[in-house]
Length: 81
Image (tube, rainbow, N blue to C red; front, side, top):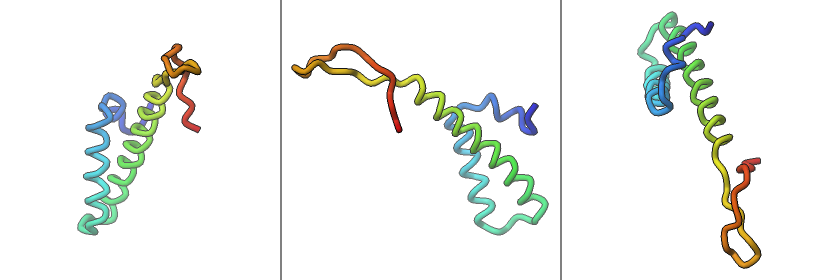
């Protein structure tokens, strides 16, 4: 079980917004050390959650394959590497 189970249910956009808010707070330097550590840990969990969602989305995307004449011939898995 993760330290932040509520993150697992967040859609990508909300998780990213929360992560951006945390980064902004940390960059401001206006939070004390204990709070900085706590929000950094949550930010790390949000980052990992967003990365997983992006990886899962990439796995579902397919590219359209073309025949020599330029007409579509089907689909193949997207190779992003």
